[in-house]
Image (cartoon, rainbow over all chains, first blue to last red; front, side, top):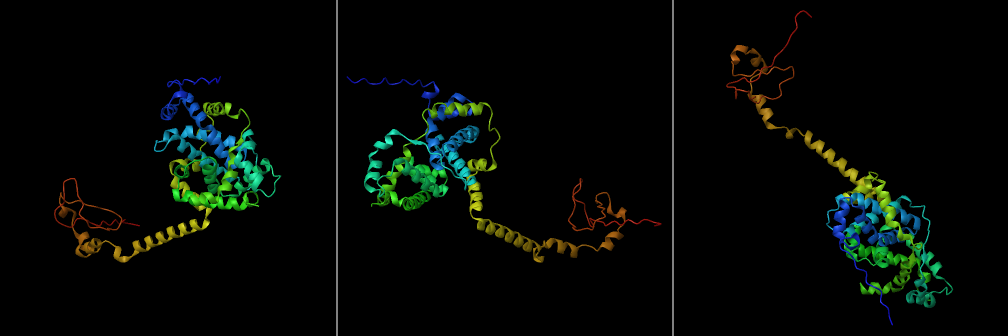
Length: 207
Length: 166
C-alpha cells in the first residue's frame, strides 16, 4: 500500500501563500515578514549563482546576504518594469562582478561538497568512465579542475555560463539581468564555452 | 544553434557537476533570519556606495564608468573630444563676425559722447531717464522707465566727476 504525503494547504493570507507582487508591496511598506518570505523563495538560486561565480562558500554567503539587504533598501526604486526575481538577480550579478573585480588577484577556492546524487548521475559517470583519458580521476578532482577553469574566464563570460549552463536561465532573462542585448549573451556564451573546452580538453575530449 | 549545442555536449555534461555542489546541510534554515536580523539592526543603511547606486539607478552610466576602467584608451579619446569641443567653442565665440550687429549700428547712429555731455540736465525733462554711471556706456538701447518709454533722444548721458583741489 502506497502512503501518499498530505498536500500542505497554503493560506493565501500568510506570507507563504501570497503572490510575489503582493509580497513586494508589503515589503516596500517595511513588512519584514513579507520580505522574509521573498528571501526564502530566492535564497538558493541567488546563493548558487554567486557561489558558482566565486567558487567560495564564505564569499557567496556574504554576497548573497548583502544582495538581499541591498534589494530591501532599494525596494522604493523598484518600478515593477521587470519581475522582482530578475531585478534581484541584477543586483546580485552587479554586486558579485564588482566584488570579483576588486579581489582580482586574490582568488582562493572554498568549494562545497558534492551531494550524494553526483555519484549516480549517468551523464557524469559516462563522462568519467568513457571519455576521460585519466580513468582514475575522481569527481572531486574533476570538480576542482572545473572550478579552476571557470575562474580563468572573465567575469561577464563566467556569469553567462553559470546562469545558462548551470542555472538554466534563458537567454532573454540573462540579457535583462546583465543589461545587455541577447546577441551579446549568445556570443559571450559561445566564446566562454570555447575557452572552457580548451581549458578542460584533457577531461572532455575523446581519448 | 543546435549544432553549437552539440559541439559543447560533453562540456555541458561536465558543467552538470556544478549543480551537485551543495552548501553544508541546514545552511538555508536560518539564512533569511540572518538577513532580516541585519536589516532590523539597521546594518548597511546608507552604506551604499556610489557605484552600487549607479548600477541600479543609471546602469548606462555605470557601464560607461566600467568601460573607462577596463579600457583606459577610451577615457583618453573621450577627454580629447571634450577638449576639442571646448576649443572649437572658444574659437567660434571669439570670431569678430559673431558680434551682434546692433551694437555697431547703434554706435554709428548715436550722437557723440561730447554732444551728450553738452546737453543740459533741464533739457531732459521729467520723462527722460538719466542714467549716470562711472562705467563706459556699452549699449544705447532705450531704457524703459516706470512712466513708459522716454520721448526724444539722447537717452543716455555720460557723467564725469571731478574733484577740485587735489
